[in-house]
Image (tube, rainbow, N blue to C red; front, side):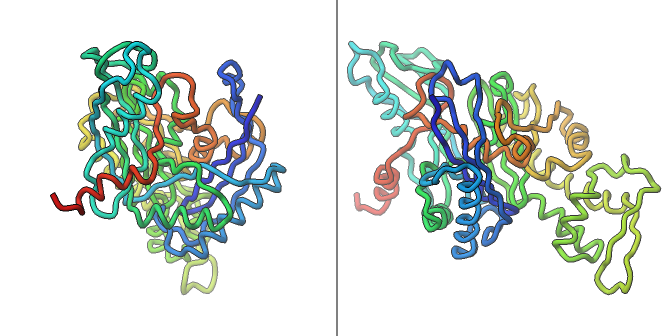
Length: 412
């Protein structure tokens, strides 16, 4: 048996809607996800991962959804939606509860309660919880428990990674999706969605950094011992490179984007000196021939700046010495020639370009680094649907999410 799942990646460059058929049974999970519908349109009303024009963003989402419906034959009513942007923040937290029925062992309700306890933090003003993700559990002092369900004990503790976002940005995103006639099943941090699609269990166990370089943002997710330990979204991405090309070569932004895609290279030293291409800059009456190495110098400088910011964030996390599996790059910008080699030289770690794995169906449109988020959203399995162990996230009801914030407003 299969169930249909829809993922909506609302990026700064494009909106991608995927319809997938996912095996319901664990035995059939090895068959992978079958992509049966794709809807893709250029983004409108989105800047650096956040909504800046509700009407334009809603219309673009509705158009992408309609195309996915036509492609798949399904009527889309609900979807998992990616969330990103510099407003995203995270921290690690702990929770502890007593086991309700010791004679029956630890139940899903006990796990829910301990994760809610970990999420009972005082949120900054205008922030709301997005994820509470367990890193590890402790049962009666026994540390390093991956999945406590069924274990006997009196006291259950958890170390969790808590992801928060701006209430304004999150509500505007929900409003646009709902305005397109779609119910939001869950907002999923795009770095986690990408990791779901392209990282292997071995990489997450050893220690790996996922770097998703999109058009407006770069999402970082550090996985160690099978689960996520650190996340961050930087307000830098492919458009940062495009803007410098537009300035340096005096081109309209849309032309600069095409020049980047067709002629860009992240390592100027790898570009042959005789390579040329033709453009029509502002103020020139006729096309101009430009050496490709000149473009590569602009691209390399901006790529280095993006990667330097990633490097600083990894060092700030304190986990830079725990990453033997290195970096996995994805997102549209990861397709730039030379970027993998540049990152390998800068980080002195193994570097791979990640593409979605174990999928069938309309693979020609999604087997590329730019589709990682959308594929991960289709494959996303929240805690209340997942039957096995592993790292999971839990849904917290909206009224419980407001609890810690309300406490800050009440006297005493």
